Length: 194
Image (cartoon, rainbow, N blue to C red):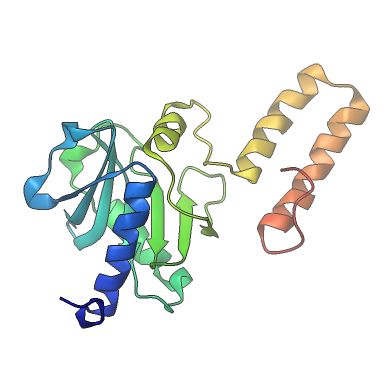
């Protein structure tokens, strides 16, 4: 079948499949689901109580993320709440611990938004591509429960550590950098701390 015969969302899913495979994910349909096939398994048309999400991502046999696919040219930011609803409605028997299903992607074939619901202030942000299964596994293990490369979360951990081990001048600098970095994360200029 020619590529142009697909529905626009099917085209996006085809491109997303390729991107997921390039990032180390195994793609499976829900009828062939074998969570032991590898560290990272992406299950297409994964069923939630509010309907099927385009992909459920499993790391080490644990559901940790959903991907909502949209056709190219769609404004993705309007679909973050839909993806969050899918996270809230995943089958309860698959959730072993609080905060396990916390990563959310909304993607077209060419653009991807990511949100980690464990962030202090979870907001969607553009990412180059999907995270590797190893990266999400590491983030799930970390006790700080900070997002993948999250400036606000990293800064909050710096602020928590600063008073015990810093001079008053350094504490002031760490506390002063936090609002600047938040402004950068909210669409202002790039943050001073990477």
